[in-house]
Length: 250
Image (tube, rainbow, N blue to C red; front, top):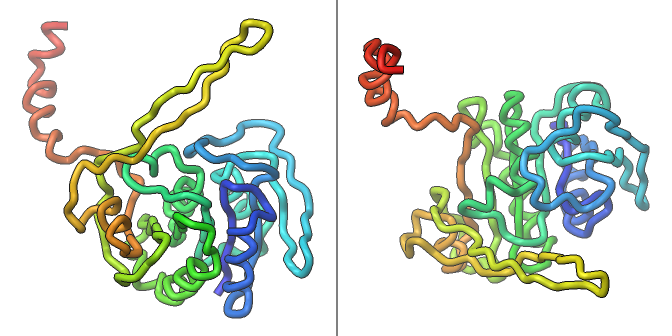
């Protein structure tokens, strides 16, 4: 099995290294990750000047990319890997990525980029820095990704709580997100600087959703895809806009 490892915490981060330690004995591993932390960049990509450098840390080798996590997946598939990977694993992220956070997460975006290209993707995030335990879940899932990430275009978003005592639970993406509070500071030149703080409120306590499941001690596994179409609205919009009246009114 050929596995591409990436993340948004930056190449050489403890989570990525724990993942490499766990995966490389059972797979052919290529590391392609950002040169620095790129948390919160979502699915952004670079259109120009995407610099790539050879990288090595102890026995681990790979490529450092001056770009986003999605850039890393793209350039790895386009040029850096001799053959298309069988699986892309993104992580292990320091901090959970559930609910609306999944839209902002560079970790999730890298796995989503794999799904867009027909490759099973796995995004792995952990609440506490117990990366070795989370890496064990990654190996467990990697061995079964051919079955789990089907049909093509599916990725798995995995969140590991501080004390995963309840096992694995298959969940839906929750509606709650990071309740943002912007902290403002003024420097000696009168310039304003903002930093984001806040909390993750739960919109539901039902364990079928990722946030409550993680809070209850489950490893949350959420299947996701990149089709953002809201199918229930299709017929309504067709009735309103495809009958010709809307064009005449315009």
